[in-house]
Amino acid sequence: MTTYSELSPTPVPHVADRLDQATEAAAAFLAALGVDCDNESMARSPRRMAQAYAAMLSSRPFEMTTFDNDEGYDELVLVRAIPVQSVCEHHLLPFTGRAHIGYLPGQRILGLSKFARVVQMFARRPQVQERLTQQVADWIDHELTPRGVGVVIEAEHTCMTLRGVRAAGTTTRTSALRGALRDGATRAEFLTLLH
Ligand SMILES: Nc1nc2c(ncn2[C@@H]2O[C@H](COP(=O)(O)OP(=O)(O)OP(=O)(O)O)[C@@H](O)[C@H]2O)c(=O)[nH]1
Ligand SMILES: [Zn+2]
Image 1 (cartoon, rainbow, N blue to C red):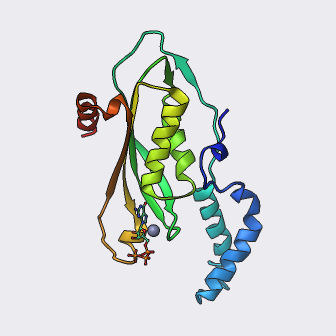
Image 2: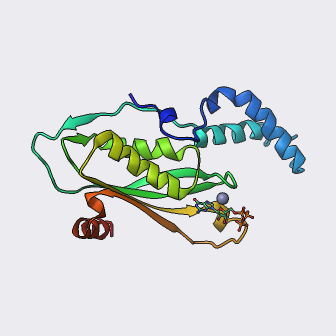
Image 3: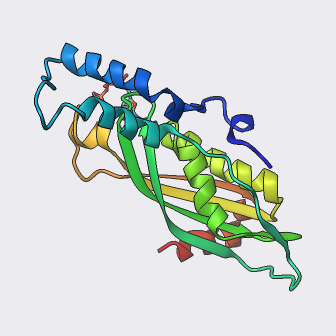
């Protein structure tokens, strides 16, 4: 089994095991900002905040399931609209969107749910969208050795839409193409099928 800790320089391990400490820190953080939690409806808010960040930052390893490509399927497999929920590493604010992953199978095919799992594994840590996109592509390339793989992510960064420049509605698209998907016709087929 491949564990996420072997795959990224920036995982956040065991966040869920440190909820009490995180709750205290959240209470102190809110107090420092002048947010009064000393009332019935907000008394548990530091805990909720700690739990929310723990959920957004807790990456889980998972068991890879691959199958022999018995039938010799050699066309593009495209898994579209995988939800992306991550946290930008600069402001620790969420960015959310969709990932589309295509690959050209070699000897093995990957269980379809694993495409969403690999996105989650790399998304639930402080990230930049470019790195997330590349990590997903490189992981599939490394673990499955397909003939080619492509990952496109389109996401909205709340640090850009809700604060700072407040450019509401802006989305960012990133892509990482490996192997045969870098080549003209296959690349064009992949990018066209996304629409
Ligand atoms: N390339 C890239 N930039 C990101 C991503 N997420 C957030 N950012 C940007 O990271 C930058 C951080 O820049 P700073 O200038 O240090 O932060 P800031 O002063 O809060 O900047 P503003 O957001 O412009 O107010 C901002 O421009 C963000 O929009 C990402 O996934 N990829
Ligand atoms: Zn940010």
